[in-house]
Image (tube, rainbow, N blue to C red; front, top):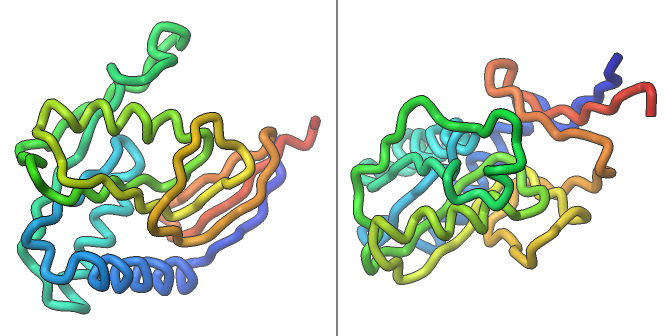
Amino acid sequence: MNEQREILNSTQLEIIIKRLSQELIESHQDFSNSVIVSLQPRGKYLAKRIISCLSENFNINSIDSGDLDISFYRDDLLTKKSPIITEKINMDITVDNKRVILIDDVLFTARSVRAAMDAVMPFGRPKSIELLVLIDRRLSRHIPIQPNYVGKIVDAIDSERVVVDWLKNSVLILKDKNE
């Protein structure tokens, strides 16, 4: 049985998404030389919310974006019984000489971000790559990667899972009661 606690509710989540959108505007102005790339499968929900917020609240409507499948770039691909392979890939953009903003929901070990940096290269050579995450689990890095934009920093132990529930608009920490 799992024990859970909510660390972000719907209102807090909306405030964070708006703040992250404003931080992106400060850095990328009109996004004419920027590309938003979400990490499949869960980063695409945050990217859609960010793009929607930029459009609705700040009238920025023409942002190049794509959803990146990192499945075959993961360093644990052969060690998993059933690898995560996304159903639909939407990456019909070039990142050549563009400022790429990688978006994911939770930054944990940073292995998926390392895979994403490799996976983005077949789409061109970016001018720069930045990272935006909703949750930064800062105590569990395996690779020295830090986000440029952070919604919330969470100190969770390895036995705890941080789950973003986009249907309920909340973020939970789940802990197995047996531990």
